[in-house]
Length: 341
Image 1 (cartoon, rainbow, N blue to C red):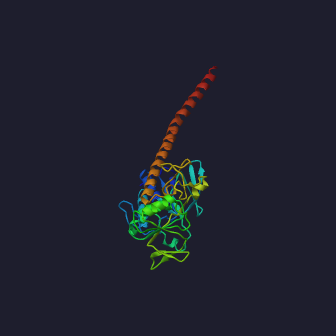
Image 2 (image 1 turned 30 degrees about the vertical axis):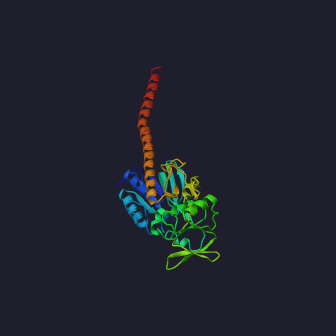
Image 3 (image 1 turned 45 degrees about the horizontal axis):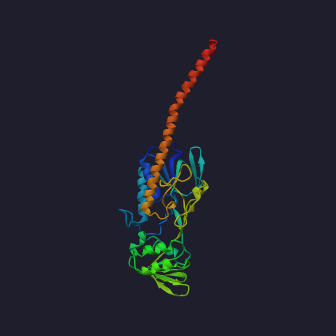
């Protein structure tokens, strides 16, 4: 079990977000004997997906199963996991005070935000209901399940071409639906033709679903394009309300996919004492990568706390000597005065 290094009303670290990144960080911090609280709003990004893939030893496991196991492991080392939503934070003399939506407050020396992001989906009727099932965005997560089947790519933004050429690895029955995206340039058109990818002009009006299974998309002119899966590139928006209240705003992600929180390789942000990890930093990180980033941030936070603990210990050790020296000087001055010096 962890050893509390702070009074009962303050934690070493408060983690905002109880997904793979947050729980991984809490596990590492608990094993480092740091008092840790995870505040989990219960809105994981991959909630619509029935299974997660690409996670060594957990391939095909339900996402909720991983989270349940993670919470149990965190608690085993003395970490706390609390359901709730952190809505704001402010600096205090020894770290931060975080405010929850129920009006309670918690204090911590360091703050780690792993709250993830929101995928803003194209406004096509029926699309959101299929998200994470047969409407997908990551071929590494879902491509194998739809290999060799007809897949469409909905063109909506700057990542469409990348996503289309990537999906060609999983199927040769690939269609680029031009929709509201830009028309492919000459070089792009040549690449698509060389890879045998069909380009269909026209805006998608709706998804066709039969027996709870995607069967195609209907264009505004009435044409039906048969498909078994549809790939989209959503715009990503960080869940960064807590960071916003501290003055840290999201910035544009280099990929053009949306926004993220800028941080260094350890998750350290521009705000002293504040770290971020997981999809809020890297929108492309899968579950395994998000968990790894949480562990990396936890190690960096523990090292930062050790530096502070050492500095305080040195100051405390010096304080008695300084007091003794001052007392001796006062005695010497008093003695000199008594003897007329």
